[in-house]
Image (cartoon, rainbow, N blue to C red; front, side, top):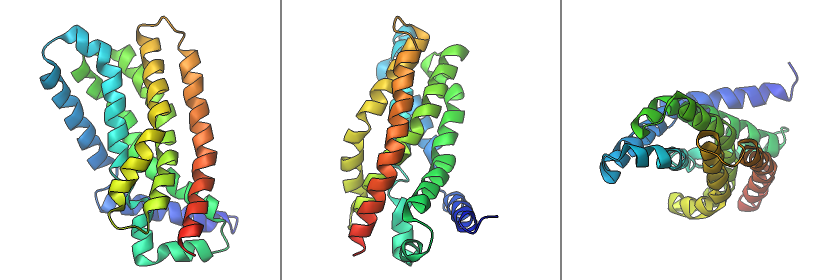
Length: 226
């Protein structure tokens, strides 16, 4: 194996194990996702047609809020135990290390939300096709939530009460992802806009956030550690 891939693989496996061990991975995110989805029908009432219309938006909003739960620990734990200094001083480019941590975060937080969506769609009166469409849009869009979250996590890593600042920084940046994620879900379910149009924009937002999020987070970490 390449000398560059060895430490990246070790970092990836370490972050996955830590996320599972401390309970900050997919379990807590799916539990929060479940709570949001179950509470919404009680708030809206027994109007099944209304639930079916707004179901994709509720699922997307629940996934967005669930993904925020663990963003504050993305770099904070490494900053507290000194691992972040070792990562930044290693021969591995910081951008690649950040991308690896983002991949581990999405695998333990974003992917479980995607898997749970078809089951939680039942609470929103969505049929199998509609739930599958929402899950597909979440599969394409949740990585963008992680990469955007990198920026806020990097900026707040050295601050006290960084979790509060993180939400303020990240939520406005996720609005375009939320808009086109819901638009693509609705297009697949009721139309009349072709599904491909908002879905392509959603995929483009994910690719842009991948590049911008990684390099912006690396710059913020370097600035913060000076």
